[in-house]
Image (cartoon, rainbow, N blue to C red):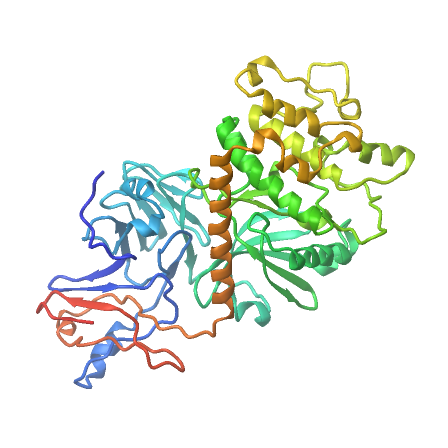
Length: 520
């Protein structure tokens, strides 16, 4: 599992081979527009021989992996130098995941029957969440997701050039490539997207305006979410990156949280230990405190609406999302709308539907109490599945919940005290977001230091992404081109790198094994 030694580069390398020679090209992790190599002899035949049809592309979903254009009939990836692409530690983000990569991890190949993915790794290669198995082969379809080192470590999305092209408006496609579906909601479909100039990954929420006119979700509610997201800026709240509004569709471009839902993580782990729960909950409470200070009530807090930035459990950063039901409360406004998810509803919302009345920000604090109970136990405090004589509605209205010994014996009294003070029927007795952060359970200085460091790191990353979004498109790239003629190798004296409105040449390396020459 140690694999071959790598050369210490910060990104992987592409290698093209034939019987007599090879060309090895180190490539930038954000390869874009293809340019062709040329020689000094003026021999056009050499250049033309390289111009072969690209039949597929691997779009990066992790670390410093580049966009890989598939031209030959076979392409291998792994840690060994003999592969077409040599995986580096920065591609996999951390050393633990990198060490799970085999000398030869997998092979993408095509024949007359189609395109396939072969797994060579003992540790596994996953296709659309399913492990392939060593020396086994699976068909590779358009927009398929490839994972290394685990079912959740997404590394590439395969894009077939022969797939039927979907039509999107130019306002969207001039800046983004739209890829696979990530999920569906009441408001529309969410698709994976890539910002074309640097392959920055995003989530694109696609909303059909005509459908929203007949559905429960109105255009006004959609614009409410957009306006809320435009107003907020917090490292633990999903970032709005762009909005593209056309006649029939609205495209909301959001920060992509690659770790999935907190709900899925709870299912995977069954429950969090207290240290893990505290770190996650502190970030969540910090985000809600920020929203309330900005006069915003979320109104639909639940683990499904809390995302994780990455699959790296050692550095968890949460993101509050789905602001569709959030309300910007101006001075004098009252909250009267019945909304939210039943198991997380505060008592005053249920009472309001029967007797009228209003509620305030404290409904979010009740939901935080429910979420904390679930984090520590793996089960909800209020559910129709409980073995008691009260239905869900009555359980909530009376705050009827139990700290079951088999689930809470190892949980501290401070954690249970915080849950109890959040699940108070009377809002005036319930802790506010400010008071939550001052509770004794969250005064763990080591945890707070770690949480603030994670949030600061996320804030710096978001700022860098925003600067990159504003940077003019100025790509300087190299296309990895297969060797088709041994005589061509010696003619490759340099690579021509084209960058519109630029005279700078990026740091690229070309190695030719035929004569040992190397030019920078």
